[in-house]
Amino acid sequence: MLLPIITPLTPADLDEIMVLERRCFRDPWTRRMYLVDMTENELATYLVVRRTVEDEKRKTKNENGEARAARSKNLQSEIRNPKSEILAYGGFWLMADEAHIATVASHPDWRGCGLGEWLTVALLEAAIARGARLATLEVRAGNTPAQQLYRKLGFEVEGVRAHYYRDGEDGLIMTTPPLADPVMQARLAAARADARARLEKCLSLTRESSL
Ligand SMILES: CC(C)(COP(=O)(O)OP(=O)(O)OC[C@H]1O[C@@H](n2cnc3c(N)ncnc32)[C@H](O)[C@@H]1OP(=O)(O)O)[C@@H](O)C(=O)NCCC(=O)NCCS
Image (cartoon, rainbow, N blue to C red; front, side, top):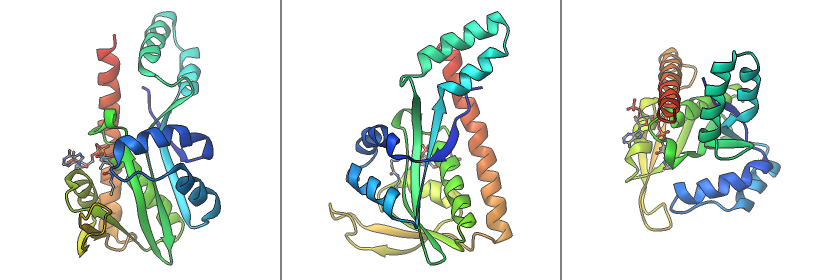
């Protein structure tokens, strides 16, 4: 199974991120914004979900000839970037005891596969590890997919920032209950499991269709 991994975002990822950023957002961040934030802002944490060729090569070593040939064929057709492929990325700023989710995006070709959910759970877990008590964010009033994702993870609308975005669209402020709350913890665990199962299914469907 081609399972992605979650790792910190590095400056070497920025070429890939810039391509995705322009596809995912109407008001994309610049490379410099990411670079400065990643390297100079101690309160920032950025994560990426990526597939690696190395993982596949390691698995291939332990398989018989037929399985290896099938995996290799699928691998060739699935992986467009020879080094890695970033499937989703996001980050937060730790402000006192609040994690402000700054950005979350999944690859347009891989939407609905659980990546946004898996990554956002990982961001919230990283925020808890850094001492966040709750998480908050702004989301475009018209961005239903993102709002649904955040609602699923326990965020609720707390207020509206009128004309928050450059094009005049309102921003909704969404906030979680305390992250350590047992109900919230159970919600995150369920979301992680759900996202992972959907991701596995998506990846195996991709594999079948490339046979
Ligand atoms: C928002 C975004 C990150 C969701 O990523 P994704 O990988 O497609 O989401 P997932 O497959 O993990 O779906 C998780 C949940 O999100 C919600 N969701 C995702 N796509 C949705 C859609 N098209 N319509 C309604 N809800 C949707 C659902 O609640 C879904 O769970 P469910 O299927 O059990 O109901 C993605 O649409 C995206 O990158 N959008 C552009 C960037 C962006 O707007 N980021 C948010 C900035 S605040």
